[in-house]
Structures are given as structure tokens and as C-alpha cells.
Amino acid sequence: TATYLILMYQFLHPCADNVDAALSLFYDYDGYSPHVTEWLPPMLDHMKHDPEYYCVQYLIEHFKMSCTHCSMLECLLSAHVEECPDGQSLCLTSVVDGASGRNITRGCTDEAYCNQKFLIDTVGNSDCKDVENRILPSGTTCNFCCHGTNCNAPPSLEPDSSALYHRP
Image (cartoon, rainbow, N blue to C red):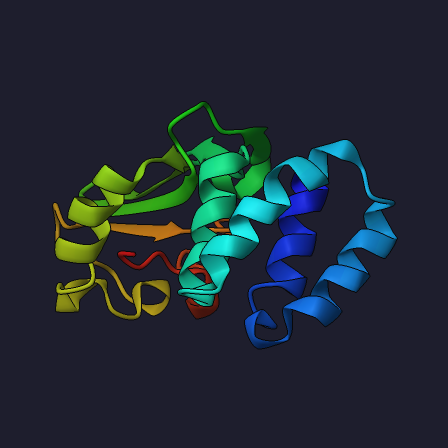
């Protein structure tokens, strides 16, 4: 499924205004597998109305995401990628600075968590800006949510801006 996710994101999301060309590339690569013909037509029907939203949203809902999973020192030394459980289609990186140092946790999460902890608590928090280059005030937690396979991979704490989660 990771191959489908990558291909659909690369070909359909940026090329929503040129769906026919994107589909020809995708079908040539996949060889018209039954799996593709099962989910692609409904997605394309939705794309006519709001292509960018439905490209990403359909993939989020229908494919298992894979994210980096680790905590603390493991995030620097031996982070690993795992498939996310059902209902968790986004990747998360949490950063907390305290008296004992910086605690980083990476893993999978869901939209409800990201709507609160990222969009409300982190995006509006000036302490979370430029977290890569500064120490957070003690007890401050910054949560970064993203969509895309392994978008929370180290070493960066903040995902690429093109992968950051936004409310549909």
C-alpha cells in the first residue's frame, strides 16, 4: 500500500488539474490491478468537486500510514518505521523540553488529536516556532502532525511544510 500512497500523492495531488495524464502514468506503473480499479473511480468522482482535498483525504482514509516510531534517545539512535493502526492516519512528532532535557516522541495519531494538539495548541504557540534551534520553556509541549508515509522521520523535528496537517 505504501507504493500506492506514494504514487497517488506524487501524480494526482500535484496534478489534480491534469488527472488524465496522472492516471496514465499510474496505470502504466500498476498494470491495472483489481485493487486500483476498485478505489480509484470513487476518488476521481470526488476529485471533480475539490481535487486537492479529496486526493489527500481519500488516501488518508483508505491506506494504512507508516510513521517513524521512537521515544527519547531511541529517536536519535535507532528509530524504526511501523504501520499505523486503524484510525490513526497521521504521523506525529512531540517535543518537550524540561529540567531533564529534551524528550522527543514520534509515532502515529488521529485527526482529533491533531486538531487539538497541533492546530490549536502548537500552531498558535510562539514558543513552538523554530523548535529546531531553540530550547522550549520548561513544560512546553509542541506537537507536529503530518500526512505522508514516514513524514515524521528524523532528524528534523518539524515535518516539511508541504506535509504538515491542516484541517480539511
